[in-house]
Image (cartoon, rainbow, N blue to C red; front, side, top):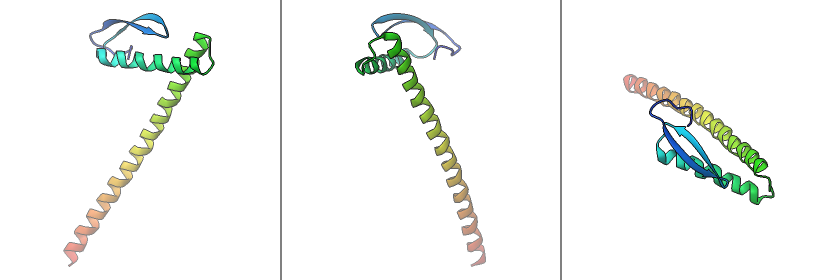
Length: 103
């Protein structure tokens, strides 16, 4: 988000009760969505007993990282399955074409 190149805009975002100013070339809707998401994660951690804002933020960051890594693993698995399905489809088409010629 923040590292993207292009026309950068300045945003002031309220996260965990504090204002943060960032620059980003991402769409305003995306920046807002990210801020709301991390704010909610920090609030979840705070309601789970982490009274220290820093601890809640670190645990929220770990939760988001876990979600990201799980999504990446799922993406990798699904890509593998898609490649396998495409290969099987090619083989079926090839067998079908051979069967039609031999008939």
